[in-house]
Length: 171
Image (cartoon, rainbow, N blue to C red):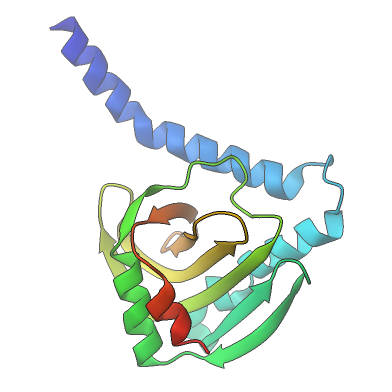
């Protein structure tokens, strides 16, 4: 009986622990003074929180491909309903929270996709509307996603889906 109560109590703490870990990770990425390339960190922070991500309904309906190595947007594409549909299908494959300490890789690409209209997700990690997503494509590991929900919270997620179909539509 006591074991069951403890297990339920610990499971009820899981969302709080995940939120705290996300806050710690974001603090480490964006506020740590030990970073060797502060300008790159500031630029990534500005990229992730730019108006195209935080305010897609205000006319920022462009997809941006960001080269982490170059520290700049290398391609801009008009968002289409086809790309939105493929992004929605990719989001349906969310399989969990991305659990590595640093969610922004040292090299690779990030693809920022505004979702207009917002995509409603109902799973064990997120329940609500997603207004934007960033598909993160590290050079040396599997892709994962950063989502911005209706409360402007960023959630890093792993996906079982293959991003190939979505990426092919961005060429």
